[in-house]
Every structure is written in C-alpha cells, then in structure tokens.
Length: 121
Image (cartoon, rainbow, N blue to C red):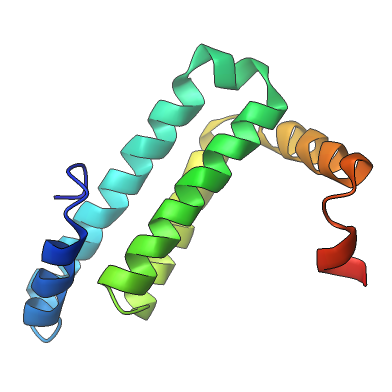
C-alpha cells in the first residue's frame, strides 16, 4: 500500500487499527521498512552517491513524503514520527559520506542565499 501510494486507504486502516496495539505495531514496522527501502534505493543510485547536492535533495524529498504520510495518513501519531526519525538515522549512518555530503549541501544553500530568511532573520 505504501508503494502504491494508497494514502486514503492507509488513513482508513490507521483509523481502524489505532486501538489494536499489535496491529498498529505491524503497520509501524511496515511503514519503517518502506521508508528504509526507499532511502536505501536513493543512496544506492550511482548518480546520487557522487553528487552531494543530489544526495541531499533525494533525502529531503523522501523526508517530505514520509512527513506527509505521518501527518495526513497517520494523524501525526508519535510512534510513526519516532519510526520515521529512526529510519532516517539508519539511512544516514549506512552511507559513510553523509556528513560531508550534507555539509556540502548546506554550504551550497548558504552561498545561494536560500537560508537567510528561514534561520537567522
């Protein structure tokens, strides 16, 4: 369902099973596995592993998609937020160039002037 982007159906399943703890745990695990597989596919792409800007953009895009799932389909449930955050830590830790690539991306954005309105002013 995650891969098919069946968002309305996911919201209905969540509403139905959010009180059944065992089932909710299974949905959370499947959500985490889906996000991790998407992230690993993104960082396994040879074009992404060579370009820090593309690397960061792919991860930001995946983060936005997973945030959207958590917010809209799972009603910002804390367990889903924690799973999403844990999976992103796993993804970043599996790629040894993550710190340098993220620093390069931030440097690129600062030089471009993208952050001046959002962070410091």
